[in-house]
Amino acid sequence: MTTHIAPAPTTDAAPPGVPAVDVVLQFAIEQFLYHEAQLLDEWKYRDWWHLFTDDAHYRVPVRRNRLRRQRFEDEVASRGIEMAHFDDTKETLDLRVRQRESGTHWAEDPPSRSRHVVSNVRVRPSGAEPGAYDVRSAFICYRNRLEAEVDLWAGERFDRLRPTGEGSFRIADRVVLLDQNVVLSKNLSIFF
Amino acid sequence: MAFDAAELHGKVDWRNGLISPEIFIDEKIYREELRQLFGRAWLFLAHDSMIPKPGDFFNTYMGGDPVIVARQKDGSVKAYLNACRHRGMKVCRAEDGNARNFMCTYHGWTYDIAGNLVSVPNAADAYHGELDRSRWGLVQVAQIDSYKGLIFATFDPSAPPLLDYLGDMTYYIDTWVDHVPGGIEVLPGCVKWTIHGNWKIAAEQFAGDGYHAAVTHSSSLGLVGEGMWGGMPPGGQFASRLGHGHSFVTGRVTRFDDDPLGEYNARRNAVVEDRLGPERSNMLGNFTVFPNMSGLPASANLRVWHPKGPNTFEIWSFTVVDKDAPDHVKKAQQLSATLTEGAAGTVEVDDGENWDLMGQMLAQGHQTRQMSWNYQMGLGHEVDDHPVHPGSFNATYYGEGPQRTFYRRWLEFMTTEKWPHVDAVRESGEPVDAADRADTSPAGTR
Ligand code: FES
Ligand SMILES: [Fe+2]
Image 1 (cartoon, chains in turn green, purple):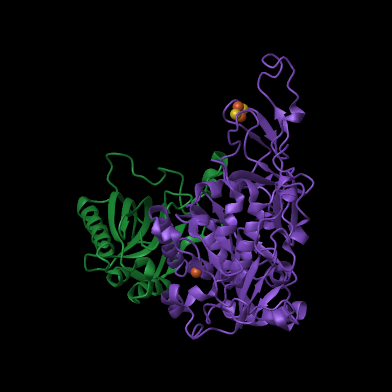
Image 2: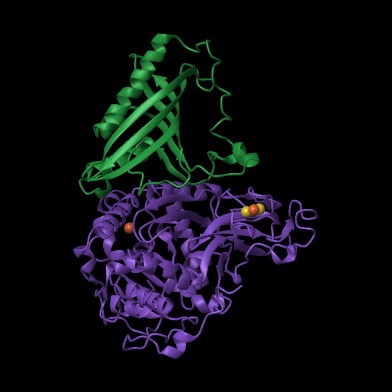
């Protein structure tokens, strides 16, 4: 229970003016993330699911309000036996997608309208997996549901992207840090 | 405008299973609920395993009020209002952790882990040494006690002992917290989220509403529990005269057959049967300990419905595992619980849809508030002398007996000034007499 996900801020950011990767790669990865956002916002969950590698891990830990001196120690949980909002493999993500396809998933039927805005994309060669990239990005996600329900979520994503060899990528690992302690909505029936 | 308790008798006709939705939306009723119900009932605070070491604390709520529950140096547990005695500022904003003391960030009054006021800036000069610190500690709960690791407290010094309050409910709780020798522990990480609806709708569902699952959860139960739900599964319902409720199916199933839990549970069942007897070894259900603590052992889930206003509540959801289970089993339980329950749980997301939309309709409408809601399922089919199961017992898994009893007890709390004894509402449903109502409770006087 000691592999901490969120480093203390800025430790892995390249200093300003020193690009970690070339602009073409940066562009390609940004396009990949925008494409992913579009799939989610157009309810193409099955296509979205195919963006993950077979060994993918998708995780949204619970954020905790901690005293400052204890904050970086465990404000965001480890990968141990600890509760999270999502803690999925490709197999359980498939189950979630099938739930959306069932026609009886009332939380998303009628479906929510969402808008994922992705920004602040920072790319570095992965230290842990040669050939892969560690990508941090920020997101704002707006949801409008039924007549007048509005939810707004913000957060940061830590992705491990693996090149496919055909100029695209697959998501091998994703940790989403949602910027809410008490989730201010009735559910998290969408993906980030 | 004064609150008229007598009016509530017209809104909660538990005998005929008719309830006015005004009790889920009316602001005056809600304020009274905080005083009469949450101010007196025994409320769940935390489990022992969440605060194992001296100085460990967990921040929670009793009704609308923030409460710190903290492990003391001698191993005992205290609970007190998280509100400074100077101007009422929160003295601790972290949700849990370990501390020696809490310094209020407004003027610096500082309290130790027992809630004693230990330091006041400028005590000698500004206060001329005249402030008696011993009189200004944090407001302690009136009583605190635990049942097999589950810590409860009440603000009412006249409340009966916790064990009396729980009554027959312990028979059912034991199937979950005392079914194996080592008992349970709570995993780190409390999932908290917000529903715009009334807390009672959720509490009553966990007390008795197995009926909703087949439709509300058809998309998730169809995927992960194939074959679990056809017609009404065999099971039963317990309704406590004290307001608690429990619905169960017989036949312990895990949501996934191929994970380590299936094998573990199969081995564990023999131990459970040995410990609790055959009737309870196969019980799998959902329950509510009156008023706002619930459990869903199928998903290892323990939760509190914290009221945040007449039309808002927060769900605080914990996951429990057998303390002595091997780590790979605990991990499997955590993964299963994460997938099903919580703000993003495949099962749970569909509950939020219902509760929130019901809340919106009551907030906006007039006509929709005038309808009586129907709680008549199984009316008259409960028995009070079941040979095995204590309490008022219904032999079918679907029924609304636990909900009727929940609201009957709620009505008693709301319409009596003294601690509501179970005979406080006459069988006729009429208000109790003036003598009872004139009596003032010691709760609220400190
Ligand atoms: S309010 Fe706490 S010290 Fe003044
Ligand atoms: Fe449900």
